[in-house]
Length: 256
Image (cartoon, rainbow, N blue to C red; front, side, top):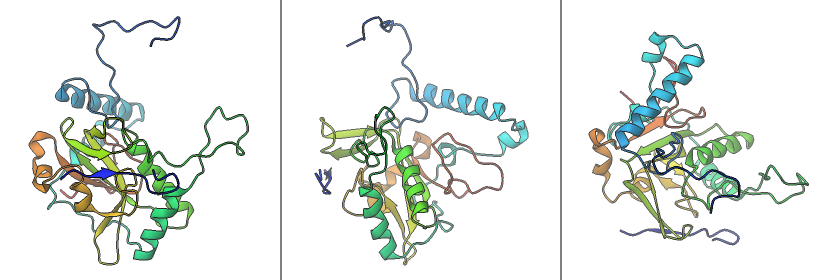
């Protein structure tokens, strides 16, 4: 089913001179935090990102034993039925709706080169740019919830391989965007159901998590194919992207 998103709040909406042109033989750059489908073989991408994460852990002084005992969100993928979100915080139904609208509409960011902060133009979280940046949006939602006095939401990751996740949207000239992963803030409601906050996909209301999954694929069984790189993963309230790591004993992405 084709789903189209449109923002319904207020307004609801060349190489530079002197720069060196990229050589045609140069490998495409890799951004392991980006949700944009990689331009290289997916296995190469995954192996490279794992290696970069390992190098970062080594720089932090983590022992080899500890590094082997922790897992990234990607490596903690599980099936829809296997997802364990029992530890996710619970908000009242009223708080879920209030915070969704408040954080969606809140203007508090100024551009670094603004000559007159904070009097300059203030921006919302980048809901109108669904192409990338979900890891930043999810973390900003968590931080603003904390500022409002609420328990920080957990994060819910979803994975495709490498561009199987797609959302139809009016906020892209092509009318559709593709991701290899996506992440959002999530809490439980009064009935114990996991609810996600994702105005980039659903600007008018928070979504039950399975309904959210169906905006990116038409069949929930898609997410059960872990061998193909698909899956879902729950993360705790700490800042995270798909290659982030947790120390042993800390809350991690999915039940195992």
